[in-house]
Length: 445
Image 1 (cartoon, rainbow, N blue to C red):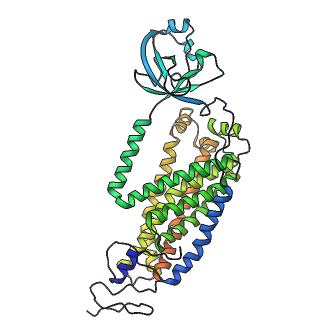
Image 2: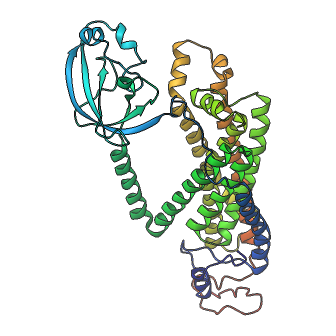
Image 3: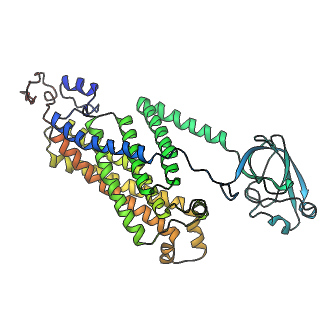
């Protein structure tokens, strides 16, 4: 990591200064050493943290059969017949909940009408080929159709006729197709950068699934795991996508400082607001299966990981803006570079904060609708733990994003304005670059 410039940058440097928006010019050897002195210990600490906290897989547990903790198999709807709901209920045919009825067994109280009697075949597992009947009420939002792929839940302790039930539809093909379109668009538009971004995305997902989640389940401190995991994702993704350069290193340092601020603020206000993190059925199930997990720490870990992606975007953009400003006018000092960069950053802040708030509001829209139906006041809604979590998550993340703009901008301005390597001659001149300190010869016009 001591060499923070790549070959294309050096070649561009040797051919004199250019106003093109290509790779960033290299910085001085002294500055590269300073940046490396910060990043090498940090990267070493991340590697050590990964080694110490590496979980070796999620711990096993006995399935409860509740929610996501159910045994599932794949199935296919063989046939769908219309039947009278009274006849079905009178015959005591099992009516299951989940994907087909609002609540399990509630179909017996339905009024007259035509129900759908779906015959479903299990297509995976030890009962492959077995069929069972699923009754779908006429007012159920999700109806079944012949030939449709479904996900079936298996309850081994239930009576034989009630062991299988449809819990969801199979969405693998449309999801895979959408992912393929996304990957194709990224590669076509981004070319090699886009391809490296996809590789970095895969690595980030691997760190999340192989390290962060199992380590939390093993009982490690969620905050520590999130910091180590997020730092690993940041280092891999940024350097893989943007190269091992001083410009990327400045973005990494700016992201790190902002993450530390988010962690401190999140820890303070989650504790001050007495947020437990146990606010829905999923977190309740996690607490029941793994009581040793600190759910408030899990909430804080989610804040840090959720803020990382937007932070990367802000810090890289600000650093690149300062570098491009310096290439456009090498005579600009650190103060002018900062002022120009911060003007760009203010526009970025406005759009990013609005995006973050709307993203959280969109995710919590059904909950907000429930509060609206209940005609609750704004104060009552904000005071409830469900909404308070989202408010703290949004505001802490937004403060970190806002702080990352001046922090990264001033770091980039100081680094690029302290360059002593020399950038050739002014545009339009043909004088060679001198040796020694490599100061630029001004062209005579």
